Image (cartoon, rainbow, N blue to C red):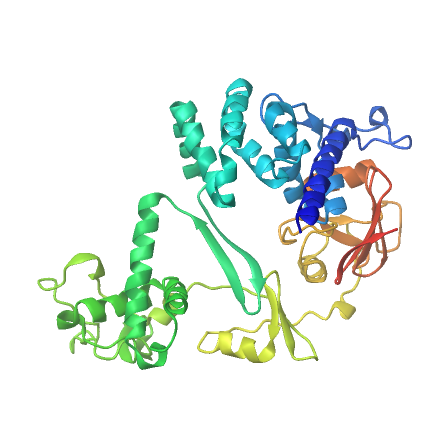
Length: 455
């Protein structure tokens, strides 16, 4: 076992040296594509390789690294950034990795963390970190970085925290068997409020017989989903927290006044209705706190519209675009109770080619269905919103229709530039399949089964 661990550390150290060598020596320009022969906007640019103190690198270096490592260009850029920080700014950490006394992944992550410090301070803090990090778990070692940064330079730490507030976000990622992970970066107080509301709603759900046997974490997950429908969440909180004003049961059935008249909706049996207005009655004298408010229409009508693309297959599976592949039976359960509007199905076999350079909306939609993500090896960028480029360059003088499935792919701007300049070459031998050749000569085929390197 110890021998296997040592071999893994040696392989990681070798990989870091290879990444540094690639970054230092890489250029996308080849003998057949010389920068001097290109238009200014297509000339290969350099970009910072890491924090101050690292050498600049080719803008296309991470695009070459990603497929070699089997990861997206964005992930490859992060790996290269952290590795160059480690090499240029933390010689003591770099040496520790090379003599196998420090795990490469920890060292690389720490080097990225210390990137906000000036090179001299970064190396000093790094040397202090490397003497202590082995006492902690992975997360504990990374948290130690933050502690040392604050101690070394409180002003920079405060500036970093300000930047983190500007980097707040909510993301869905890693779909798996009808579920998906949701992560959010919130400020500390907002996070406390969100957690408190989830706890309240989960407790209300637990009191209902149909949820009483569900695990606490399942109820908290369901509660977060209910928060996506504020009116329903408010009705539940009102009925549970102020029953003397709003009733004692949660969103079963109630009448609500809407623009179209009185609607029957599954949203709150027991909520008192004003006989004169038909609205849910509330007594401001007895309503206190954040659950006050009058719901005047069916909350179901307030739900936001969500457009999803689902591909049904004969093997009883359903592919939810950019989300997951699930069983049709599970899809039926997920859609139960949801308002659904079905849009016409696009038969990709019936999309005609077009003569104009820019594809029509229908052709663009078909191309995005064909390539749900950017048509580049291991890329996970959603194709919708990316440029559609002709895999074989569009020729104004050609009379045959060139804008068609089989000659289009969704590409990001940098990839588009690299392809147009001839650094990366691309062929589409059949509809839905691309063959890429990198500046270093590596070849990859991409289709709906993923990416495969061609040896």
